Image 1 (tube, rainbow, N blue to C red):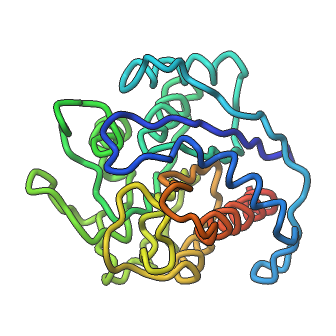
Image 2 (cartoon, rainbow, N blue to C red; image 1 turned 90 degrees about the vertical axis):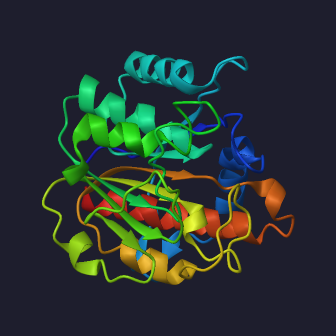
Length: 259
């Protein structure tokens, strides 16, 4: 089994409500070092992985130009699953999925944990950003290949489909019945902000961190994942940083033993 690759993408566009997501990769790595490498939940140990460091975009690019930059970077290093990317804001997911679909020609289901739908055609006069990326992902791979769970807010322009589930709906069977490899994108604002305040766009309500982890562990054959929208600036207690590192560890362990 190949080593899981890990890399940070310290990118955040100009549209975020609160800043700090670009700082997240370093904070998550640092707080991982404070945790045991054994998961009592999965009864498995974190094994060796390949840390590719961080991919810093030029400071003057954003949106589609950032996506093009990241795709070229991934082509240069010949990235192949399994991997975990540490964002950064949620727009980093778009170029990662474009790369997997168009450059590697892979077929997969995107499982999107998020308090928000992220399906606006445009947000704050920008077409490509953290609030619009899933609109473009669905156009690329098809709505039937995207499952969004944990939503508890929407914009008037966003339509709720049968593959979009509110936080209070039962979607466990949908997660259990996925037949293809899975790309997991975890926006940490899916967690109730009373448990995880360190996010760029907090939304009241939602499930606790252990409930979210339980649902992630239902997924089979995760080939790649990203963890996004953690802002260390929004929680100076470092409690959110430790929880982000905890989820990172659990996702890494799952990929190492199951893909």
